[in-house]
Length: 213
Image 1: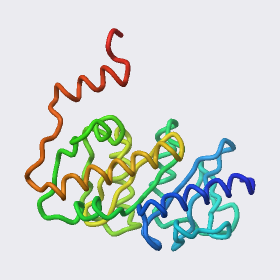
Image 2: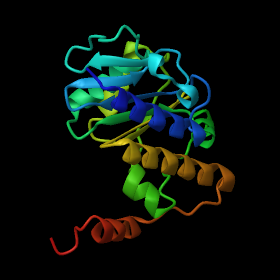
Image 3: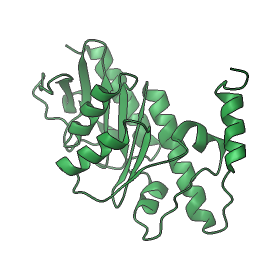
Image 4: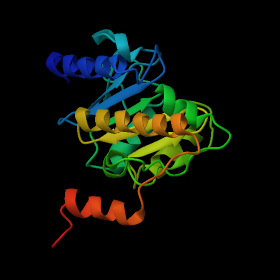
């Protein structure tokens, strides 16, 4: 069973997400795969900025069985499924940051958010946009799972965002840069100048070590 130290680490990560303004009240959820095959998931209706140990659900990854009596977030289906599909993913974060959620609610949405190196390298050159489905619905879970097989970040139209990572820091970094890209888009309107294909390729060659390999 998850240790108290692991639960404390999860709580600190959740509070950090809240302190950064990525969630308010019960507007998001967080999960973390443990080495023993268990997953910590924020409990249904819990507030990440203020979550306490009694609101953290311990779930078996393989079958989704609740191990400590705390009901996990209603979005736990896609959290667990993304981890099952991707061994490289240990953290999944669903959030609703101000600018990214505002962009998700626009009638006319930006399809290219590669305004800075951080977007292309960390968030992803292409961010799938998932049509609106009721939060917690099987349809939403199916679309998130499918999109995150090959992407680390997705935009849920009229809802929010999901990112994943190998650890808390990577997921947090992706969420913060996701919000930054959306802020740039909304503050500049049509007066934006995304990176070109050649500029992105140059970044990948330099930072991802593709050059000379």
